[in-house]
Structures are given as C-alpha cells and as structure tokens.
Image (cartoon, rainbow, N blue to C red):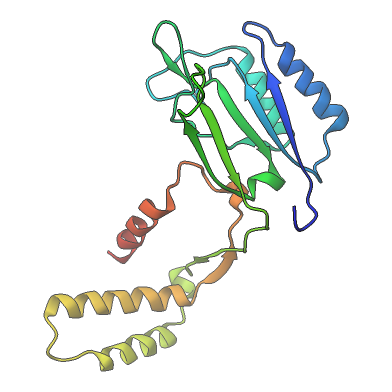
Length: 220
C-alpha cells in the first residue's frame, strides 16, 4: 500500500464434519501471526453459527464456537455480510458458510463489503471487500454534558442570541422548531469531542438511518 502497510490474504477451507481447518488456522495464528501486518482470511467454513446465520436459519455446529473464539482471541473480526446467504444447499436451504475475517489493521480500512451472485455459475456466492489504500481520517462524536455540568449562563446567552434573530412573523411551529434546535445545539456545543473507535462500532448500527432518529428523539 502507498503508506507501506503490507497486506496478506489467507484462504482457508474447513472440511465438513471436521475441525482440521480450524486446528491448522489455530497453529498458524499461534506461530506466525504478526499483528503489524494487515491480514484477511477468506474462509469456506462449512459451519453454521448465530453470529452469521441468515434470518430464519437456526442450525448450529459445535465447531463454530472454537472458530469464533480463535478469531476473537487473535483480534480478528467478521467483516463479510451476515444477512446475505452465500450457499444454496441441495435441500433448498439458504445458508451462510463463506466468511471473510480481518484483523484490526484491515478492519480500519474496509470501505464496504457485499455479496455478489456474479459467481461464474458456482453454487457459492462471491464475497467482495473494498479496502481503501490510505488510513481513514479520524472521526469524532460529541459526548453531551450532564445537566449538572452545563454552563447555564453560557447556554442562556446562546439561546437569547438566537431568539433575537428570529422574525416575529414566523409561524409558531417554526419558532418552536428553531428554539428547540438552538437549545439542543447549545447543549451539544458544551460537550466533549471524542474520537470514534471504528473497531468497537456495532456492526448492526446503520448510522445513516438511526443517527437522525436518535437526534430527533433527543430533541424531543
């Protein structure tokens, strides 16, 4: 990569009904795992687990716990999509047995992941991972102050300044909205900016959808 970071990929096949592939992965991680190197593990796992099963599919394998524990112990996390099946069995069951894991260095640079049916007529779907070549810019979120920590004089001054800018001809509903927003923003401005640790962000949290809802909820 342009910044000198090395990227390694590992292809793993877990034979159905055995733990051979998992044991081999464990041996490699114990003897050769260098956390200073970005690594991706592409895995034909043949395992079912609630961590990646598609909705409505509840079958589990005993070996899945050892795989999950092994990957988490070595700071790998699942980056492939969990809700999209990757394999259609002969019985017609849609399952997810093809997985992509990444260590911390790679997970910071994953731009997107997807599952494609453009698979050259294979019975397995293709997993696509887009990785940025440059480190992401840091992002921050605001931790709002508690009520006891608010500088009330500063808050009142900010809100009063906003009130003087409002036109007396505005509808009541619009005045109410502007006033509520000014109070909320003045409260947020007194908060602390905290850098977001993307490695700890919950995967199911869709920021584009849920963050605006949380903001509206807080304003109310």
